Length: 421
Image (cartoon, rainbow, N blue to C red; front, side, top):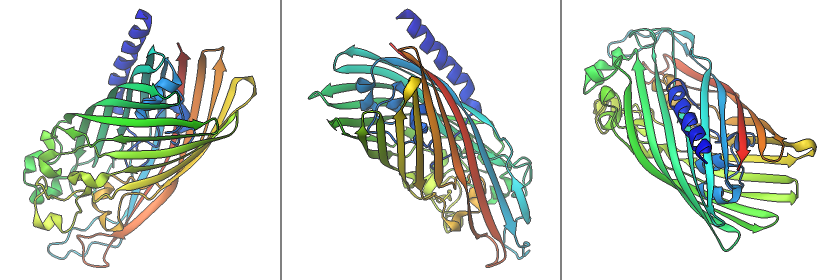
């Protein structure tokens, strides 16, 4: 037991060191799934149980998956660019951009995860999961808005989630996670917006800001028959401390809470070695003013940093996730999946979202696991977020003068190692 606790502590330390350089951007800025097995099924699986990382999606699953340890890392490759067509008008009061295509740098990122679950008794399990979100990230080697170079932002989120699950009536379980959240934010090259800011010295090019908060996730998982299981979970809005160094950028004087989200799903077992899962998930970006407030008219009616200051204009994102797995011969399990969710950026909000072009909508995934003996396994998942582009007018230019197109595609390769106690 001491060895297990020491290993978990070591993994937590490694995660804390690696996280500041990491990001994720798939369903807006939420990950498309948590845990390598679930990622191989495009994030579907709230009604299934794989291992300790299940708690990040459904904390009720721990008592089904049993005691064990899981740790791994993803290599994430987001490709982002924007293109401006049309020359600036030069009219007084307009805000034209230089025409041309600009590609964001910072092509590869590492994102580790770790989780452990213990069985307290036959009907109760306790665990801890560590994982991350992020992804409003860009690094443009250009003076995009006429300010310093590079231009861009970076948001990173880390969760430490102690969780407990309890089985009742034999085939049903409920669970809860306490979410201890940490955020880090940085922004560069936004000097041109100083005239719109309530605190120009807290707008851009400051030291990275840190924020902390607490939330909860609750879940249910029920095995209705040998052929069918259902699951659901809900994560509360997580109130975060302010990004004080950027109180002149984000609404509510540096507010950047983590929005609530929910997921419901079913899993069908048409054969003993086959699982088919379908999940429906919604992330409620509209709850957070710094994310949801539109650029216009807010930029003209309030200052950046005020309660009604301009934001990114993101709408809620609802995603349908489908996945399947097949347990084959020689200890191999094969997985595949597809998900679709309308991206959260309206065409009217393309100007500010040059900084955060989270516009992908479709994910195609592949995964496999290979058992090593009776209690260990190596897991692999590959994700391809298909290229997607949205276009809209520059809202601070003369009508019809400039168009802005935001484009993104992604690759992710994840490997993990799991042990059953």
